Length: 291
Image 1 (cartoon, rainbow, N blue to C red):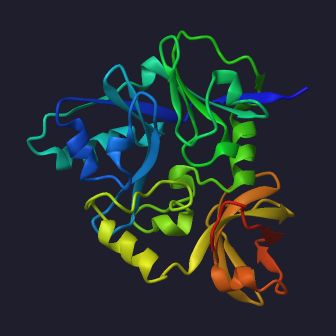
Image 2 (cartoon, rainbow, N blue to C red):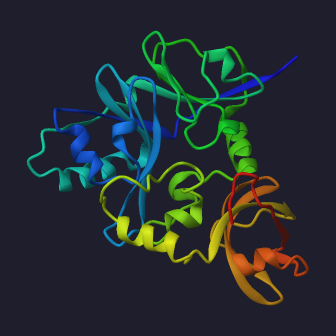
């Protein structure tokens, strides 16, 4: 019998954006094409600094004519403030509606079919008072749900937030500012190209020039990858070393799994053992990664 899991992601929140200029306003700012968002399609995207460095990432879906941004709840006030800085005279209203919604993830065999979702990244269906969408980044990630606070929970095994963390670490999926450094990380180091977070055909957006140059000039020298930890879990920010040289840095982790930003030449060197703190670190190339 197939087993499905779910987790309420209390650390995630929702911004509701309305107004006749909402789409045009976002289109000039985010890394993906807002025009792809519809009642049947959600996207994954990021907001960058003018220099092309990471600030925020989020999912964008449509519900009842409004755009919903699902993102890190603790940083919503900061994101709204940042977006309002660029709004100028655009007719767009941004509202934190996290108290009215619960964000959940569902994964495991048959998790998409259970909600009537096709196996297409970002495919979306309306539910009673909310919506469900296939994770736009990776089909193996499962489905994401935006539930009204009073909606019933999914009929699946409650794995809790740690269960979801274990799941996404195994897949190599970054979790916002836990894995990407503000004003420093580059999207392509974090897999945004393969995870459908960048549209290469849309017009200009903030940070687009550096992002495009990084891709077309082959400037990516590091990649965020899942790693196995043999020993005590190193704290986020711990250096990863090989042959006495620093080759990377640990980011978020749980138990024997973590993500780490590792130099590509170190990933290619299969003979040098990697260490972080008192633990041995073994990197793994995710099947979806192209490097």
